[in-house]
Image 1 (cartoon, rainbow, N blue to C red):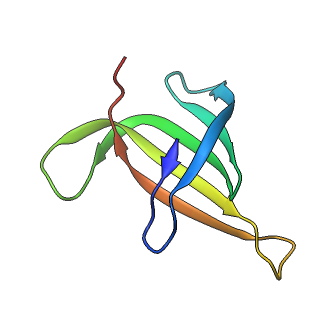
Image 2: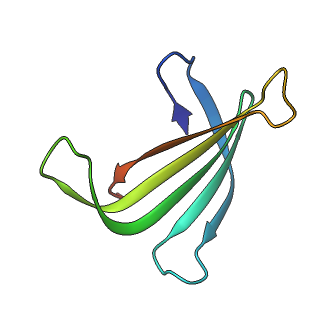
Length: 88
């Protein structure tokens, strides 16, 4: 997984753990570890629109990225949300 966000250098992640929802079939999560941050990706099966086109997607995606902070023990948690489709 690569993350390119405004104002940040490209961050590379390695997949660590994958899990499936215990109560909602089709939903799953993936945990990633990188040198500059950690991330959790949650994929939910539901209708989703990107707000820019008329296209409807079958999945919504939420990416939570945790950046370490130099002056805080908690760091910074950033959420990115969007729509996706899954290809084999």
